[in-house]
Image (cartoon, rainbow, N blue to C red; front, top):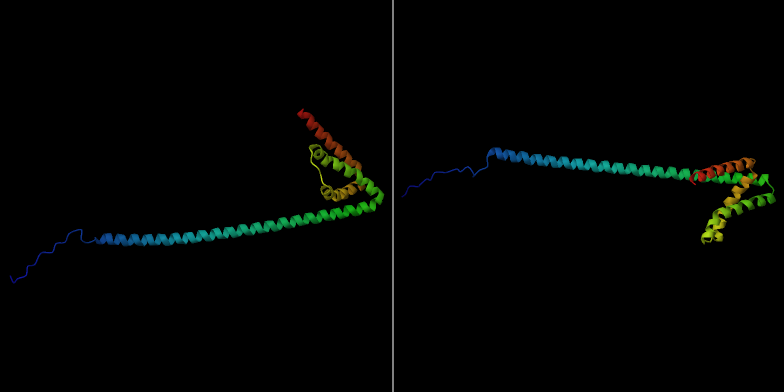
Length: 172
């Protein structure tokens, strides 16, 4: 019994991984790694593109707001200049007594036109509401009263009223 017994070595097929499967696992892992890197690069590019679009939209909105503000300021300056010119022409064209008499009928008509419906429905206008529009109406009224084309304006208003009457008559 002094001899050693050597048992044969059996290699079963399931003990080791086949070299082709090892290569396939390595290639698959590298492919997943590359796809992850590519996905991260695409995500970064997309987020930068969205940020650039947001900056561009903000810039467009800012410039639009500036342009609108400039347009409103220009309109306000033009209206102010027109009001000053109309007031100056009215002051030069008519003596103070005529200006007051010319504005009184227009102010009374505007009160009937805008306040007549309110009074009949039970709403009351305060003195503040009347004062807000009276200065602008007076300036416009004096400009209209001193205009040389007053007769033409009256004819155009009558023509406009006739057109409205025709339209209303067509609905009856």
